[in-house]
Length: 345
Figure 1 (cartoon, one colour):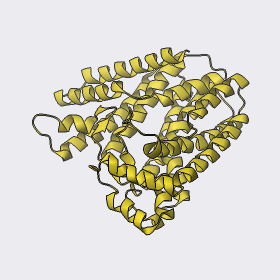
Figure 2 (spheres, helix red, strand yellow):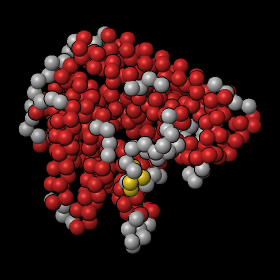
Figure 3 (cartoon, rainbow, N blue to C red):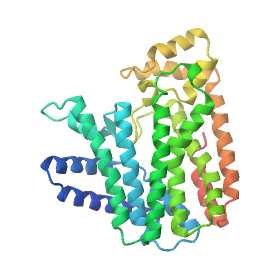
Figure 4 (cartoon, rainbow, N blue to C red):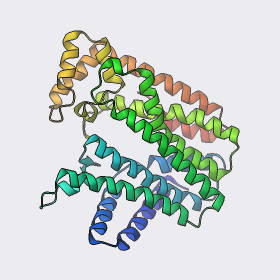
């Protein structure tokens, strides 16, 4: 199935499922909440996880394109469920260049309290989780055995994401002594790799009926790819993010007070004056771009940027090596290599 055709089909299925949810809501308030969910979900997003599902399934010879649409919609709503809860943890009100669920309620003329708005964000995530699961269980595209395997995969992934999100929450303004590369890698593995890369690829493996041995090889590729995915995102927030992206506000990590790998390097190898400047402004949501540029200059001058690039490159190499071991055609591997090239700094 062509990329654009598949993306359109997934987005249409998500919109349809959310319309059904809005139409069958038992309350007016519930209909408003689901309408806002639909407005947010259809406004933006890369649809990366459904696309990785499609690529993996077809790379292993899968031909039943009907199996991809509902599951792609499930993965997208599952992703949006995690984002809704992530926005509460991060106290964010913006996503995809507009209000998120919390932001919608804070913008109401009645002046909704922050606590109520965040409650709506929590409930939006809960609804998206349940709607994603009911779409899977109600679908006619899968056998009962496939449904059980996919539901188990989704829930096992959620457990690890929860632990990863907990670790990530502790990365808000910790001391450098409480932070380490090992801890960061574990956080990225649990929070990002498990659901961004392992989940869609293992879901495809279930549909394709792959052996346990091949699924193990897929994990050897998906885990470093997922860590690479997040490391590059962290790197971009400081060194590539020259304007607000489609997905997140500009310089979000620093304004949020979150220590990621680039900043960790800056705090551990800078002199006392530079460390004091970094820490004095860390977590200031209203900090000007000009002040953040001084932080970025520190990271570039002390070698943090170069060290970060080298670390990312090790994951690029590890992922490429693991790709060579997968039992897919050379043409499919070339498609995956082209995708990986987008994550090289």
